[in-house]
Image (cartoon, rainbow, N blue to C red; front, side, top):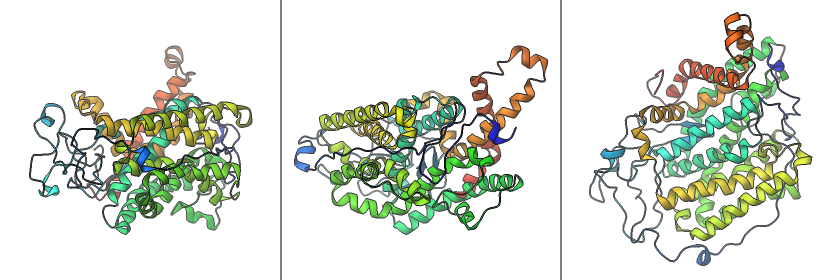
Length: 480
């Protein structure tokens, strides 16, 4: 079967910023439909937003003396730092309780919460405050790793079943941008130009490798690109393609948005640190302005602007987590603000259901922005306030191993999962020719498609995942 025969509905002009209307089985990863807005912003005042008491007595979180791993997530994906073995066995459980992290002096400013690549509570060796951080073994934050793995699973689930409620239960893209912002803030402790080069080096080779197959397939099916093919080299705009391959290349909006966040992060982080709470709150302003005052141009730039504005708050929220801003805010204000954002996002989605044709947040940008803002804020604040690290995950070796693989091969899973679902359809069609399969397998079930899709994703991870190792300048392996 050709790709345009596999259950997808009619889409829209891919550069117009409107939502894809795919049928269950192959939904747009994050649609860009009728953009909705919100007009009210909260003010800023440090004296009222920050709690007057210490959350943990005289203790702060972990000093910047910890090992710095140049790492980054992409949505449903992650790249790895300059450390040579970021996926080596980690200290968890009983082994982790034998040591304690080095803590800054009471009242230290700028102490950051642990992020993937940081030394976590109880995983760093005891040593003097001035000890060389490179001498301490780095350990990954399994809380963030688990969120990233769940986000990838949710994306594949949504694209298989097309359930509109998936975006409400777990707004995966907002979570991924929030995690990416945290790691970007950490990496920018080093020279910005070096960090940006590192991010692009880790992102582009897997994209080129995947794109080679997609572009060749479209060429064989009559596509002839113009100068816009440059976006298949550096996806600063949506890469062009034909309708035959749309289901495969439409997911690239995420890589394009991520790339813009990476390029603008040095300036965004500088601005954020001038007035953290004010910049965080005002990061919702662009999506409001696009909804109510100016819809943006109807081209590649306009599409990129909508997506950037939708997830800007989540990215800046990652800065706030890294710099300890969330930890210092009054819990009541954080919870109240998060619930207000969630309530507004849900209300707007259902109130404009008739206009969008669905309550799917992926099709309603303003609802997506506010729902993701509230949801991710609670996740990040809970991490900082309760010091959640998911170290217990090490007791479940298979689950822990699965989380590791998802994080090490996140780019591969994201890029290839749609092709896996596409190929699953003709493969299942062949099963109908085998009487035993027809009699005993639920070949017409979406759940069966889901299972076959994951088997093919596993095949792509084994065959193509090594490109992520090469991009990270590591020895290629079938599995990390």
